[in-house]
Length: 324
Ligand SMILES: [Zn+2]
Image 1 (cartoon, helix red, strand yellow):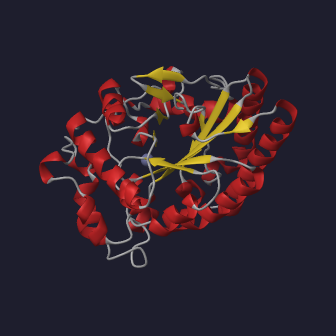
Image 2 (image 1 turned 90 degrees about the vertical axis):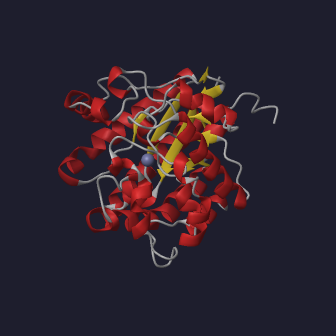
């Protein structure tokens, strides 16, 4: 069995961070992330990398009208105990269309991704909803996914993979995904520090451990095997590609080395190495981040030539994928 490199990107624009950031505080990163996407696609095309772009449903829209038309009925929208989590709360501030409001609309980029050979477009839910936050329900999730599917299918895209916002999921939500026809999802690394939890479970200790692990690999390489869960294939994440930014920027080469070591282990053992990030992580210090990604791509090319490692999107792990 040959090893695989899986890359998934959570493409969410401002919807992914709106509960704790605004256009003013994070808008420049979002715009920088938009500019970085064609460069990532270019790197992927040059190195034969097939990535999954898990896209927030609202991002598929090109105008306010299209977005409002896709919203689930009022009674099926999320009702979190903490209302700030709901992106429906911010609909009033959304502009007219993508030209006027590139922080919230991304149809042109979705097309660009879809037009790049080998890329998969999956879902990151319609509204960037949080399955483990108190007040959210499987019924609201079902309505949310229906909206996401509707918007994707208008562009001829059949959603097969799901990446859960903030990596929050549980059995009841996987069941909804299966009923909605999704086949594959990105799970979390096995280690305790990475288990799915709501925001309140993200303790300082967990965060500190994950940070140390990112630069040293102290919790292991997180190479994985896929498994079947509630009728979907779990393609577990190995590592979040941290941005090269801020105080930790001088340590970034250690992070890239940790990733490359993990990829090598996966290639040698015939396992999966699943790397993920958000386009907006490349929104600042874009050159440095593209250079780091290029190093990863070049390492992949070496592993492909030495161990026959392949690059696969998440949906290629669905059951019976070979028969399709
Ligand atoms: Zn997200």
